[in-house]
Image 1 (tube, rainbow, N blue to C red):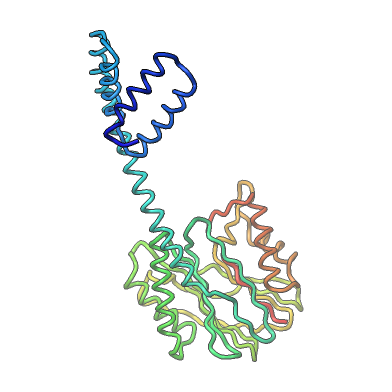
Image 2 (cartoon, rainbow, N blue to C red; image 1 turned 60 degrees about the horizontal axis):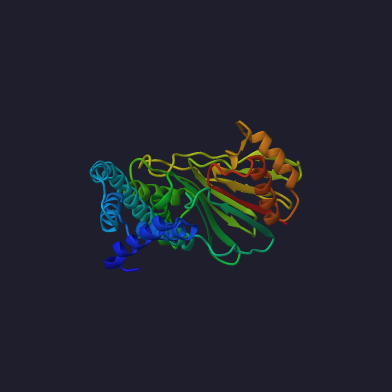
Length: 333
C-alpha cells in the first residue's frame, strides 16, 4: 500500500463492506488502521478521507455531509492528543536509548571480578532496584597481600548517578598511586565531589584498606551506613564504629580512621542502606532483626553467605527491592 493509493484502497474496502459485510473486510480495516497509525495519520485526516470516500460511492444526503463538518472539528482534539502521545512516545524511546547507554557505561565502572587473597574470602551481591543503580563499589589491588575497597551510595538515580559514579571512579583511580590513608582519601574525594556535582546531591562512602598479612582493616566513613563485624570467638555481631560527613556537603569535613583485626572465622559485612531498609509487611526490618538473619547464615563461604542473605531479605520484602542493594562480605579463614 502506498500513500497515493490510500484513498482508492479505502474506497474499495468501504464499497466491499457495504455490498456485503463480512469478517474479511473488518480484518483488512484493522490492518489498515495499524498502517495509518504507524504513519502518524491523524484522526481528522481519516475523517476527511471517509467523507470523500462516501462521495465517490454515490449521492450523500446533505445532513450526512454536514455532519462530517462537526465530526472533523471533534476529531481535531483527538488528533492533537494523538500527536501529543506520539511525541511523548518518541521522547520516551529516546530516553530509553540514553538510559541503556548510561547503564552500559555504569557497568564498565564496576570491577569485573572479585579479587582473591590468601586467608580471606570475599563475597559480593549488588543489585539495582531500577534500571540504573546509585550504589558504587570497587576493589583496588595494591600488591599480593594488600587491597583497598570502597562502597558508596549516590543520591539520585539514573543518568545523574551514573555520571557521579564515573567521577568517583576516575577520582579514586587518579589518587590510588598516592600514599593516602582512608581518611585522606575521603578528604580529597570530598573536595572533588563538592566541586563537581549538583548542590542537591551528595555521596556516602566507606573507604578502607585490608592487609592480609595482619588481617587488619583500616577504614574511614563519610556518612555511610555502618557495617557489621562478627566475632567468631563470641558468636556475636556488632556495629562497625565510625562516622563523618557525607561527601559533597562540607568542604572542611574531617574523617577519622578506625581499625579492626579479623581472627579466624571473623566476618566483616559492608553494605548500603538498601540492605538495612528491607521492608517486611508494613514496617522496616530493625538492625537486631537483620542480625538474626545474619547469624543464621554465618560460618559458610563468604559468597554463599552473601547470596543467602540476599535471598532471605528479598523473600521477606515479598520480592520487591525498595532501594539499590549492595553487600560485601569479608571472612577470614
